[in-house]
Amino acid sequence: MDHVGWYVSDLAAAGAAFERLGFILTPYTPHTHENAAGERIPSGTANRCAMLGLGYLEILTYTPALDTPLANQLRAGLDRYQGLHLIAFTCADAAPEAARMKEAGFAPLPVADLRRQVETDDGAEITAAFSVIRLPPNAMAEGRVQMLTQDTPEAVWLNSLITRDNAIDALTGVVVCTSDPDEAAARFGRFTGRAPAHGGEGLDLALDRGIVSFLTPDQFLTLVPGARIPSDPFIAAAIMRSGDLAATLSFMKKQGVEVSTRSGVMVIDATDAMGAYLVIKGSR
Image 1 (cartoon, helix red, strand yellow):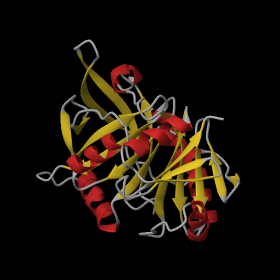
Image 2 (image 1 turned 90 degrees about the vertical axis):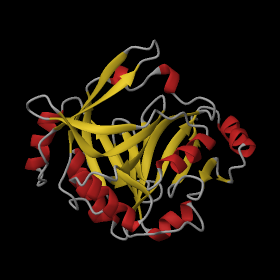
Image 3 (image 1 turned 135 degrees about the horizontal axis):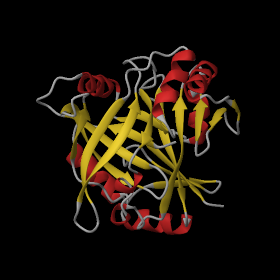
Image 4 (image 1 turned 90 degrees about the horizontal axis):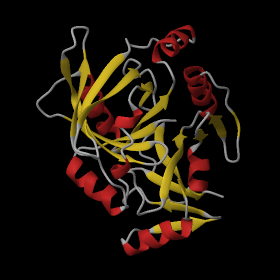
C-alpha cells in the first residue's frame, strides 16, 4: 500500500484539520502529467500530503478553472460524500503491472507520468516523478483505485516533512465498507494479483505492506459504533500504526480531539478527519 486520498472541497480547511491531528503537510501543489513531447499538462487537481515513515495521506481538491477528467471525477466523488475516495498501491514497475491488469479483465489507461517540483531540505529544487496506472472512471465502485511506481522516493519522503509529533509512523491498511464484500474483495484481488482471505472481522487482502479489509455496514459499525455510512460502497477508514499509542492519545487530548478506545485500538471520528475514520493501532 502506498497511500490513501481524501477528496475535499476546501483544501485550506482540510489542511487545518490534519495539522490539528499532528500531521505535517506538504505545500499546495497543482498536479501535472508529462506528455510524449515532455510538456507538462495541468491535471485539474491539486494536493497536500501528510508523509509518514511508511506510506502517506493525500488530500486532494479540484482546480476550479480547469475542466479535466480527473477534476470531474473528483467533483463526482464529492457529490457522494467528502472523505476517502482513493486507494493507491505501489509496485516496482508500472508497465508490466498494467499488462497484468489487462489480462485480469481491467482496462487500464496508458501509464501517466506525473511530475511535480519539490524543494529539498537543503533548499534545492528537484522533480518528484510517479508512473501511475489508472482505470477508467467508475471501473471501481469504491472510488479511484490505482497503482503506481515511486520513481523518485527520495524527493517524496523528505526528512523535514515526516510526521512525528503524534507518534503515528505508518499507514498499515484501509477499510472498504460494502454490502457485497465477497465481490469487492475478489475484484481488488484481481487488481492487485493477490487472493483475499477471511480475517478477524471480514475479508482481508494482505499485501507486502498493508491490508485492505472489506466489511459489511454491520461489521463496520461493530468496529466503529455509531459510524455514519454515507454511501454503499465507500472507503470508510484509514488504518495507521502508532509507535507509542499512549503518546498519540496524549497528543490528541491536548489538541481537543475526541478519541474512542476499545481493545487497544484508537478511533478518531470522521468529523475530526474530514469525512473518514482513522483507526490507530499500536506497534505491538
